Amino acid sequence: MRQVYGWLLLTPAAILLIAFTHYPTVATLWHSFFSQGTAMRPAAYVGLENYLYMLDDEIFWKVVRNNALYAAGTIPASIAIALLMAVWVNGKLPLRGLARMAYFTPTILPMIAVANIWLFFYTPEIGLLDQFMRLFGLPSHNWLGDPDTVLWCIVVLAIWKEAGFFMIFFLAALQSLPPELEEAGRLEGAGRWYYFRRVTFPLLMPTTLFVLINATINSFKLVDQLFILTKGGPDNASSLLLYYIYEVAFSFLDEAYAATLTVALLATLAIIAIGQFFIMDKRIHYR
Image: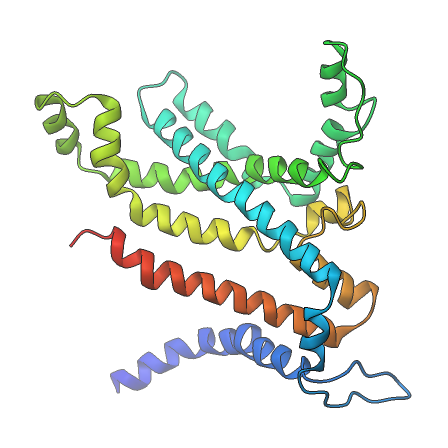
Protein backbone atom coordinates (compact mmCIF):
# COMPACT_ATOMS: atom_id res chain seq x y z
CA MET A 1 0.00 0.00 0.00
CA ARG A 2 2.88 2.36 0.79
CA GLN A 3 4.36 1.76 -2.68
CA VAL A 4 1.06 2.66 -4.36
CA TYR A 5 0.81 5.78 -2.21
CA GLY A 6 4.36 6.75 -3.17
CA TRP A 7 3.71 6.29 -6.89
CA LEU A 8 0.53 8.37 -6.61
CA LEU A 9 2.57 11.19 -5.08
CA LEU A 10 5.14 10.96 -7.89
CA THR A 11 2.59 10.78 -10.71
CA PRO A 12 1.91 14.55 -11.15
CA ALA A 13 5.63 15.35 -11.28
CA ALA A 14 6.27 12.41 -13.64
CA ILE A 15 3.50 13.55 -16.00
CA LEU A 16 4.93 17.08 -16.14
CA LEU A 17 8.47 15.74 -16.63
CA ILE A 18 7.42 13.46 -19.49
CA ALA A 19 5.18 16.09 -21.12
CA PHE A 20 7.61 19.01 -20.99
CA THR A 21 11.05 17.34 -21.01
CA HIS A 22 11.20 13.77 -22.29
CA TYR A 23 8.55 13.96 -25.01
CA PRO A 24 9.87 17.24 -26.55
CA THR A 25 13.39 15.78 -26.56
CA VAL A 26 12.33 12.60 -28.37
CA ALA A 27 10.08 14.56 -30.75
CA THR A 28 12.92 16.95 -31.60
CA LEU A 29 15.24 14.04 -32.34
CA TRP A 30 12.57 12.43 -34.54
CA HIS A 31 11.89 15.63 -36.52
CA SER A 32 15.61 16.12 -37.18
CA PHE A 33 15.50 13.13 -39.56
CA PHE A 34 12.78 14.69 -41.74
CA SER A 35 12.69 17.52 -44.25
CA GLN A 36 10.69 20.69 -43.69
CA GLY A 37 7.13 20.02 -44.76
CA THR A 38 4.82 22.48 -46.53
CA ALA A 39 1.13 22.57 -47.40
CA MET A 40 1.89 21.20 -50.87
CA ARG A 41 4.72 18.85 -49.92
CA PRO A 42 4.60 16.87 -46.66
CA ALA A 43 7.74 16.22 -44.66
CA ALA A 44 9.82 13.28 -45.92
CA TYR A 45 12.38 11.12 -44.18
CA VAL A 46 15.88 12.28 -45.17
CA GLY A 47 18.03 10.41 -42.67
CA LEU A 48 21.21 12.26 -41.76
CA GLU A 49 20.85 14.87 -44.51
CA ASN A 50 20.09 17.67 -42.03
CA TYR A 51 23.15 16.76 -39.98
CA LEU A 52 25.39 16.74 -43.06
CA TYR A 53 24.01 20.15 -44.00
CA MET A 54 24.75 21.38 -40.48
CA LEU A 55 28.39 20.28 -40.79
CA ASP A 56 28.69 22.30 -44.01
CA ASP A 57 26.88 25.34 -42.59
CA GLU A 58 29.42 28.17 -42.21
CA ILE A 59 27.07 30.22 -40.04
CA PHE A 60 26.66 27.26 -37.66
CA TRP A 61 30.42 27.01 -37.11
CA LYS A 62 30.68 30.75 -36.65
CA VAL A 63 27.93 30.60 -34.05
CA VAL A 64 29.68 27.70 -32.30
CA ARG A 65 32.89 29.74 -32.18
CA ASN A 66 30.96 32.71 -30.77
CA ASN A 67 29.38 30.50 -28.13
CA ALA A 68 32.75 29.05 -27.14
CA LEU A 69 34.21 32.55 -26.73
CA TYR A 70 31.12 33.68 -24.84
CA ALA A 71 31.35 30.71 -22.47
CA ALA A 72 35.09 31.22 -21.95
CA GLY A 73 34.48 34.87 -21.14
CA THR A 74 31.45 34.54 -18.86
CA ILE A 75 31.93 31.32 -16.89
CA PRO A 76 35.31 31.93 -15.15
CA ALA A 77 34.71 35.66 -14.65
CA SER A 78 31.19 35.33 -13.22
CA ILE A 79 32.24 32.56 -10.84
CA ALA A 80 35.35 34.42 -9.66
CA ILE A 81 33.45 37.69 -9.12
CA ALA A 82 30.62 35.85 -7.36
CA LEU A 83 33.08 34.19 -4.97
CA LEU A 84 34.82 37.50 -4.31
CA MET A 85 31.50 39.22 -3.57
CA ALA A 86 30.39 36.37 -1.29
CA VAL A 87 33.59 36.53 0.75
CA TRP A 88 33.25 40.32 0.94
CA VAL A 89 29.64 40.42 2.18
CA ASN A 90 30.20 37.46 4.51
CA GLY A 91 32.64 39.46 6.61
CA LYS A 92 32.04 42.20 9.14
CA LEU A 93 31.01 44.85 6.64
CA PRO A 94 29.05 48.03 7.46
CA LEU A 95 25.61 47.97 5.84
CA ARG A 96 26.21 44.35 4.90
CA GLY A 97 22.54 43.73 4.11
CA LEU A 98 22.46 46.67 1.71
CA ALA A 99 25.59 45.40 -0.05
CA ARG A 100 24.08 41.95 -0.48
CA MET A 101 20.90 43.46 -1.90
CA ALA A 102 22.90 45.64 -4.32
CA TYR A 103 24.87 42.64 -5.60
CA PHE A 104 21.75 40.50 -6.01
CA THR A 105 19.53 43.17 -7.63
CA PRO A 106 20.67 42.56 -11.27
CA THR A 107 19.54 38.95 -10.92
CA ILE A 108 15.90 39.79 -10.28
CA LEU A 109 15.64 42.30 -13.12
CA PRO A 110 13.80 41.03 -16.25
CA MET A 111 16.01 40.15 -19.20
CA ILE A 112 14.41 42.79 -21.42
CA ALA A 113 14.95 45.48 -18.78
CA VAL A 114 18.61 44.48 -18.44
CA ALA A 115 19.10 44.70 -22.22
CA ASN A 116 17.58 48.17 -22.32
CA ILE A 117 19.73 49.34 -19.40
CA TRP A 118 22.89 48.26 -21.16
CA LEU A 119 21.67 49.68 -24.45
CA PHE A 120 21.84 53.05 -22.68
CA PHE A 121 25.52 52.31 -21.94
CA TYR A 122 26.48 51.14 -25.44
CA THR A 123 24.56 53.60 -27.66
CA PRO A 124 27.04 55.63 -29.79
CA GLU A 125 27.45 59.35 -29.04
CA ILE A 126 24.81 59.56 -26.30
CA GLY A 127 25.60 56.34 -24.41
CA LEU A 128 27.13 56.48 -20.94
CA LEU A 129 30.27 54.68 -22.10
CA ASP A 130 30.91 57.16 -24.91
CA GLN A 131 30.18 60.07 -22.58
CA PHE A 132 32.85 58.76 -20.22
CA MET A 133 35.36 58.31 -23.05
CA ARG A 134 34.71 61.87 -24.20
CA LEU A 135 36.07 63.15 -20.86
CA PHE A 136 39.47 61.81 -21.91
CA GLY A 137 39.25 63.09 -25.48
CA LEU A 138 38.63 59.63 -26.97
CA PRO A 139 36.42 59.29 -30.07
CA SER A 140 32.97 57.75 -30.08
CA HIS A 141 32.65 54.06 -30.89
CA ASN A 142 29.76 51.91 -32.10
CA TRP A 143 30.21 49.15 -29.52
CA LEU A 144 27.33 46.98 -30.72
CA GLY A 145 27.98 47.66 -34.40
CA ASP A 146 31.63 46.60 -34.41
CA PRO A 147 32.23 42.85 -34.95
CA ASP A 148 35.38 43.07 -32.80
CA THR A 149 33.59 44.44 -29.72
CA VAL A 150 29.95 43.36 -29.90
CA LEU A 151 30.42 39.87 -28.44
CA TRP A 152 32.48 41.17 -25.53
CA CYS A 153 29.81 43.77 -24.79
CA ILE A 154 27.35 40.89 -24.40
CA VAL A 155 29.87 39.05 -22.19
CA VAL A 156 30.12 42.04 -19.81
CA LEU A 157 26.33 42.26 -19.62
CA ALA A 158 26.01 38.54 -18.81
CA ILE A 159 28.66 38.70 -16.06
CA TRP A 160 26.89 41.67 -14.46
CA LYS A 161 23.58 39.77 -14.60
CA GLU A 162 24.77 36.39 -13.30
CA ALA A 163 27.47 37.12 -10.71
CA GLY A 164 24.95 38.19 -8.05
CA PHE A 165 22.94 35.00 -8.55
CA PHE A 166 25.99 32.79 -8.09
CA MET A 167 27.04 34.86 -5.07
CA ILE A 168 24.01 33.60 -3.13
CA PHE A 169 25.18 29.98 -3.41
CA PHE A 170 28.71 30.81 -2.32
CA LEU A 171 27.41 32.93 0.54
CA ALA A 172 25.21 30.07 1.76
CA ALA A 173 28.17 27.68 1.55
CA LEU A 174 30.45 30.07 3.46
CA GLN A 175 27.88 30.46 6.23
CA SER A 176 27.60 26.68 6.56
CA LEU A 177 31.33 26.18 7.24
CA PRO A 178 32.12 25.35 10.89
CA PRO A 179 33.55 28.44 12.67
CA GLU A 180 35.88 26.12 14.60
CA LEU A 181 37.99 25.71 11.49
CA GLU A 182 38.76 29.41 11.32
CA GLU A 183 39.56 29.52 15.02
CA ALA A 184 41.93 26.59 14.63
CA GLY A 185 43.56 28.29 11.67
CA ARG A 186 44.15 31.46 13.68
CA LEU A 187 45.70 29.44 16.52
CA GLU A 188 48.04 27.84 14.00
CA GLY A 189 49.04 31.27 12.68
CA ALA A 190 47.45 30.90 9.24
CA GLY A 191 46.90 34.16 7.38
CA ARG A 192 43.65 35.02 5.63
CA TRP A 193 44.87 34.18 2.16
CA TYR A 194 46.55 30.93 3.26
CA TYR A 195 43.41 29.86 5.18
CA PHE A 196 41.18 30.67 2.20
CA ARG A 197 43.43 28.81 -0.24
CA ARG A 198 44.01 25.74 1.92
CA VAL A 199 40.73 25.39 3.84
CA THR A 200 37.86 27.56 2.64
CA PHE A 201 38.17 27.15 -1.12
CA PRO A 202 38.59 23.33 -1.06
CA LEU A 203 35.48 23.04 1.12
CA LEU A 204 33.59 25.23 -1.37
CA MET A 205 34.36 22.95 -4.31
CA PRO A 206 30.98 21.11 -4.28
CA THR A 207 29.25 24.49 -4.48
CA THR A 208 31.70 25.59 -7.16
CA LEU A 209 30.80 22.53 -9.23
CA PHE A 210 27.09 23.32 -8.89
CA VAL A 211 27.67 26.93 -9.89
CA LEU A 212 29.91 25.83 -12.78
CA ILE A 213 27.17 23.60 -14.18
CA ASN A 214 24.61 26.42 -13.94
CA ALA A 215 27.02 28.90 -15.54
CA THR A 216 27.69 26.46 -18.38
CA ILE A 217 23.98 25.96 -19.04
CA ASN A 218 23.39 29.73 -18.92
CA SER A 219 26.15 30.29 -21.49
CA PHE A 220 24.13 28.29 -24.03
CA LYS A 221 20.68 29.78 -23.46
CA LEU A 222 21.05 33.48 -24.16
CA VAL A 223 18.30 34.85 -26.43
CA ASP A 224 16.55 37.83 -24.84
CA GLN A 225 19.44 40.28 -24.72
CA LEU A 226 20.52 39.43 -28.26
CA PHE A 227 17.00 40.03 -29.54
CA ILE A 228 16.97 43.53 -28.04
CA LEU A 229 20.60 44.58 -28.51
CA THR A 230 21.98 43.09 -31.72
CA LYS A 231 19.68 40.45 -33.26
CA GLY A 232 22.85 38.42 -33.79
CA GLY A 233 24.61 41.10 -35.82
CA PRO A 234 26.64 42.55 -37.25
CA ASP A 235 27.22 39.69 -39.71
CA ASN A 236 26.40 37.07 -37.03
CA ALA A 237 29.27 38.33 -34.89
CA SER A 238 27.14 38.16 -31.73
CA SER A 239 24.84 35.28 -32.67
CA LEU A 240 24.89 32.37 -30.24
CA LEU A 241 23.66 28.83 -30.75
CA LEU A 242 20.24 29.12 -29.11
CA TYR A 243 19.55 32.43 -30.85
CA TYR A 244 20.53 30.83 -34.18
CA ILE A 245 18.05 28.03 -33.47
CA TYR A 246 15.39 30.66 -32.78
CA GLU A 247 16.20 32.40 -36.07
CA VAL A 248 16.09 29.20 -38.10
CA ALA A 249 12.80 28.09 -36.55
CA PHE A 250 10.85 31.36 -36.43
CA SER A 251 12.49 33.65 -38.99
CA PHE A 252 13.48 31.14 -41.68
CA LEU A 253 10.60 28.76 -40.79
CA ASP A 254 12.82 25.69 -41.13
CA GLU A 255 11.71 23.62 -38.15
CA ALA A 256 13.50 20.47 -39.32
CA TYR A 257 16.91 22.14 -39.40
CA ALA A 258 16.12 23.90 -36.11
CA ALA A 259 15.43 20.48 -34.59
CA THR A 260 18.81 19.29 -35.88
CA LEU A 261 20.57 22.26 -34.28
CA THR A 262 18.68 21.62 -31.05
CA VAL A 263 19.87 18.01 -30.98
CA ALA A 264 23.44 19.25 -31.42
CA LEU A 265 22.94 21.68 -28.52
CA LEU A 266 21.44 18.98 -26.28
CA ALA A 267 24.28 16.60 -27.12
CA THR A 268 26.86 19.26 -26.26
CA LEU A 269 25.22 20.01 -22.91
CA ALA A 270 24.90 16.29 -22.15
CA ILE A 271 28.60 15.69 -22.80
CA ILE A 272 29.57 18.65 -20.63
CA ALA A 273 27.24 17.53 -17.82
CA ILE A 274 28.55 13.96 -17.90
CA GLY A 275 32.13 15.21 -17.78
CA GLN A 276 31.41 17.54 -14.88
CA PHE A 277 29.44 15.03 -12.82
CA PHE A 278 31.41 11.84 -13.39
CA ILE A 279 34.94 13.26 -13.62
CA MET A 280 35.04 16.43 -11.54
CA ASP A 281 32.50 15.32 -8.93
CA LYS A 282 34.75 12.45 -7.80
CA ARG A 283 37.69 14.80 -7.31
CA ILE A 284 36.10 17.52 -5.21
CA HIS A 285 34.09 15.77 -2.49
CA TYR A 286 35.79 14.90 0.75
CA ARG A 287 34.94 11.47 2.16
